[in-house]
Image (cartoon, rainbow over the protein chains, first blue to last red):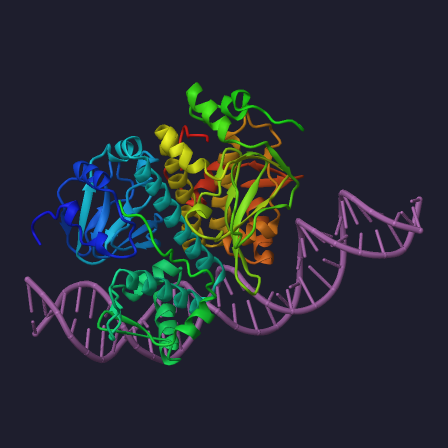
Length: 246
Length: 246
DNA sequence: CGACGTGTTGATCTCTCTCAATTAGAGTGG
DNA sequence: CCACTCTAATTGAGAGAGATCAACACGTCG
C-alpha cells in the first residue's frame, strides 16, 4: 500500500457503478496525475480559505466537506466516498470556500493544477464527465438542504443513513451481514444534519429502538429499509445506476 | 420584447461581471440556441420529476429552484438571476430532482437538448465555463446549507438579504437609492431559510427595526451593511469578480 | 494510571413552530 | 362605485422540538 497504483490497473474502475473509459483517456488521466498520497484519519485535505487547493479523486476511505462560522459552529456539507472528485470549487474561487477533512485513513489521486483545463481541452468526453460530477454533487447537497431545512430530526437522520448506506453499498460487491463500514461519529452526524449532539444521540436511539437500523463497531446495518424510506420520504432513489470516474 | 435577441447583441454580455467571449464561440452558442421564451411570474419552468427537462440560460427576471416533500413541505434551494444556467442537473439524472419556478416574469434562452455535449466537444473553453458555473452554483448552495443548518433566524435572513443584494446589484450599472428589485415574498424567504412564515416575518421586522435593511414596494435597501455583515458572518464575499455566461 | 474522545443520559430552557385572526391592497364582476 | 375574492403581510397565544448545560461511563492509548 506504499506504491502508486497505475490508472490502467485501477481497482475502482472494476466496479460496475463506474463508466468504462477509453484507453486513450485512461492514459491521458495518468499523465495528468501525480503520485498517490496517503493521509491519516483526521488529516486536513483542504483547509477553509486555502488559496492554492489541490485537485484530486478520493481513491479510498471517507472524507467530508464542511464550513464553519467564526464562533466555531460547523456545518458538514456532504460526505466524500471513493470515486468522488474533489477541489473543483476551489478552481472557481480565489480561495477554498470550505474545508475538506479525512474521516478515515484515505488515499488520494491528486492531479496537476492545470489538469482541469487539460482534460476539458484534450478530452471533451472527460470534460463532460467533470461537469456531470459537479452537477451530481450539487444534487446531493440539494437533498441535504431539503433535510436540514424541512425534515425533523428523525427524518433527517433516516435520510442520511439511507443515502450513505446506498452510496457505500454501491462500492461493494456485496454487503456483508454486519453491514457497511460506517465511520461517522454522532458529532459528525449532528454537524451534517444541523442538530445538537445530544438530540442526535437520542434520535439515533429512537430509530434503533424502533428496529430501523443498527450501528455497532463502526458498521451500519439497515434493519428495516421500508420504514426508513417511509420516514425519509425519498423518491427517485437518487443513486444513478452508473457514473463517471475521473 | 416579443422578438428574439441575437447572441451577438446580447445586453447581458455588456455587463462587466461577465467574461468576454470569442466571436466564434458566440456564434456557436447562437447555433445551439432556440428562440427566446417568455414565461409569466409563477410559471413552472421545470417540474419536479420531469423527465425531459429543458436546458436554458435565464435571460431576465428571477426564478428559484426547490424541492418538496410528499406532505407539501417545501425547501427553496437557491434563487436564479439573469445569467444563471439552468437544467444541468437534469442531464445527470433521468428525471429532474427539483422544480424550477419563475418568481417574476422571465425570458429564457433555451438550448437544444444536445447542446451540452456539443459545447463540450466543440468549444472546450465553453465546456470549462459550464463546469465553472456548476461548481459556482454548488458554492451558493453550500452557503445556504450553512445558514439553514447552523445560523439562527436573524443570521439566516441577514445572510440571504446580503447575498441576494450583492448578486442583484452586480447586474446593475448602479444601484438606485430606492434599492434593488426584490420580488421575494416572506413565504419564499421562509422556505429558503427553513423557517416558518410567522417567524420569518417577526425576524424581518426585528432587523428592520434595528435599522439594518428596508423592504418597500418590492425593493430592498441595505441600510447598514456593516451590521448585516457582522450578523451574517460572511467572509470571502462569495461573489467572484467575473464569471462566464453561456 | 490519567487524559482524551465518544457515547449516554437527565434537567431545564428557549427559539421557533403551530394555530388562529385580522388587516391591507389588488383585481374582478356587477 | 361597491361587494367579493385572493394574496401577502401582520400579530397574538400557546405548545413543542430541539438546544444547552452538566454529569457520568467506557475504551484506548501514551
